Length: 102
Image (tube, rainbow, N blue to C red):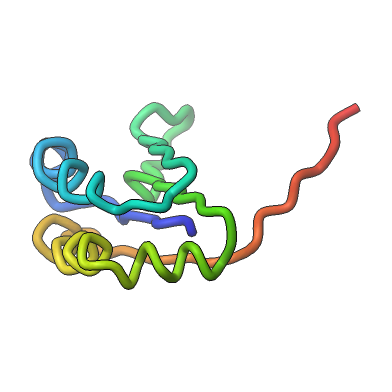
């Protein structure tokens, strides 16, 4: 699952809340095999990207991810999102495919 957080009203406050409140809350979600954060504040060019943070959550299967999200900790993390995501949020589910490099 990929979570796209839109550009917040106050990026510094978003970052503080995400790191100090949301991450500790979300760390209670058991069953994830990996979790990555990509902060988009270091972009070249003149345009400010519409996405502030990209979060990728990994689980062994769709069923495992569904169980993580349905857990008490998953529901609590989801319920917390409106507390800081003033720029909106998009949840994208899919199956990751690896492509061999040459």
